[in-house]
Length: 267
Ligand SMILES: [Zn+2]
Ligand SMILES: [Zn+2]
Image (spheres, helix red, strand yellow):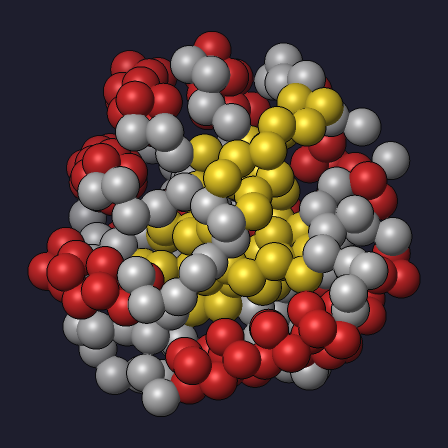
């Protein structure tokens, strides 16, 4: 069953923390029988210079060329050109300018920084102990809503990645999640079911069933991604993603081409 879903979240060695070659990722997706695959590597960052977090500005055109080369080498198989762009409030215009330069099939928005704190990096996770966890959740999801409203992104990735190290909110945040869902729906932004959380300390898909049900009630469309940083991770645990989508009440999902949504029934 899981073989019938596209994997839209595949990284490449350009980002400095992924292995394999780009051709190996395509090969893996083809061999698994996925209907489509898409690269979505980390767009260069503007607020810090760290070659282990994202591709460099010089590498961006090379990344695009490599994806195009693989599209030409696989005329019978859809290889999508995506990108994962960090939402950094002070650099919106820079990000918008660089995104406008290329014809992406879809643009993922992600929040990896809360006020300059790279909360999902293990070297900075100690900071969680110093903060009020409910405030962290509020601030994080506030940034997700601001990001969605910019109109720069088609899909928000790993929607509740703030839970990565197992830090749970103390308060009931259903009201906050409804505000997020309403904002995403109004801004025409989809979300991704991302299986990488299953192998993180939290041991859960992003987002949780609770959040996903609220997203479904607001009509927020879904996509699927493994967040692969190695070819062997392509399509990982997609059976669990499909089950979660169904448990939340979804009966369809979307594919993307040229930043247009294509609705598809769930397999
Ligand atoms: Zn990465
Ligand atoms: Zn990410």
